[in-house]
Image (cartoon, rainbow, N blue to C red; front, side, top):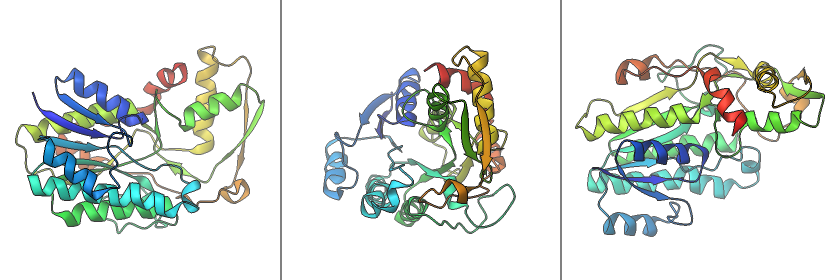
Amino acid sequence: MSKILLTGAYGQVGRELEEQLLLNNHQVISCSHHDLDITNEDEVASMFFNVDFDLVINSAAYTAVDQAEDEKDLAYAVNALGPKYLASACKQKNIPLIHISTDYVYDNNIEDFHTELETPHTNCVYGNTKLYGEKYVQESGCNAVILRASWIFGRFGKNFVKAMLNLGKTRDTLSVVSDELGNPTPARALATDIVAIANQLLQGRTDAFGIYNYCGHEAISRDEFARVIFKEALKHKLLDHDVFVRSITSQEFGAKAVRPHDSRMSTKKFEETFNLACPKWIDYIEETLKA
C-alpha cells in the first residue's frame, strides 16, 4: 500500500481523487488548506519531515479567475508558491509529484489545437500564476508530471455546468460568450487518469515526467456548451422549460479577466505516453447535473 499526499482535497478534482485513490487501495493523507497551508514553506517542510510519502498529488488551486485580478498576491501564493514549496520538498525526498495546471497558458493567438511544444503565454493574473507554478515545479528538478487541464466540471464544487443549470431554472434566456473555444474536462475522468499515472510512477516508471495536455473531447464554444447543458437538463427533467442561449462576444460580456479565445488542446502526447484515452465529456454531463 502506497502513502500519497493529496492537497486541495475538498475541491472538485480533489474529492474525486480521494475516492479514486482509496478505490485503488492507497493510503491517502488528504489535506485542505486548513490541514496544510502549501503557501507556507515551513509548514510544507514540517509535513514532509514528519511523514514519509511515496507520491504527492497537488490539486490545490486558486481558481477565481476574475477575482484574481484584485487578489494577485493570494493567487500567486496558492498557484505559484504552493507548487514551488511542494516540488522542493519532493525533490529533497526524491518523491514524484503530479501537479494540475491550466489551458489558460495557451492565450497566444494560435487558432488551432495547442501542443506542449508551444511557448506559453497568458493575459490574466490567474493564468500567469499557474504558469509560474509550472516554472517553479520544473526548476525544482523534482520528478513531476504536470497536466494542463481545461474547463473542469464535475459532481463536486462549483463549475460552468452547475452554474448554467441553476441560472436556467429561473430564466428563459441567457447570454453566453461565443468567442471562447475549448475542451470541457470531467473531474472524475481526470481523477481516474491521474491515479492511473500515479500507479505507473509508483511501479517505478521514470520516463514519463514532463508537461501534458489533458482534456475532454470534443472541443466546443462556451455558448454551444451551454446549449448542450440545457438540452441534457431537459432530457433528464431537471428543467421544465427551454432556455434560449443568446451568443455574445467576450467584450460584450465584460469579464474582468481576459480569457483565451482558443484554448483547444491536443492530447496526443498524453494518450501515447500513458496509453490512456481522454474522455468524451458528454458522458459526464448527466452525473454532474444530477449532483
